Amino acid sequence: MTVAQLSQDDASDEGGDLLLWILVFSELAAFGILLGGFLVMSLIHPESFGAAKLHLSARLAGFNTVVLLASGWQAALAARTGASVGQQRIALLIAAALGFVFVGLKALEYTAELPFAGDDRFATFFELYFMITGFHLAHVAFVAGLFVVAALRPVRANIVMLTTVWHVIDIVWLVMFPLIYFG
Image (cartoon, rainbow, N blue to C red; front, side, top):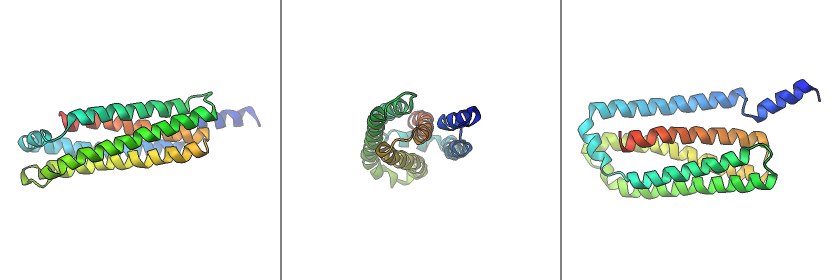
């Protein structure tokens, strides 16, 4: 293997794959459009959006934020250079478990919010809320499942790719959380 091939392999292992970055950009663009629409509608309907937010559990969502960030930390541990296969597996499984905890807590939160979603005063808010947070939740559940698959046969390039996508999911939530719950 030549030095050029080694450096090319190293670059792809470090998340330099063009398709990965196209995926990251498209995810950020999609969530940006959704959150932009939410922000515009909250400016058009400030009273109903403000009243609807009173029915959200910011405390539970805050705790869920910590769960998601802890999961991202575990994913980063799995992706670190020099991590053994055993360390990668454990970190990926913990990251997946915390991702599934996030999903469970969000489902619990949804059950408390559903009764208010049928109220005509809050319809626009809750339609956007469930669309945006549900889209995010689908990403969390899907990538958490992929963490489990990756833990079965850890390949550094796959772990780096999944961790990169997971961190995008984290970033989206860190923008979404204050905008939806407090903004």
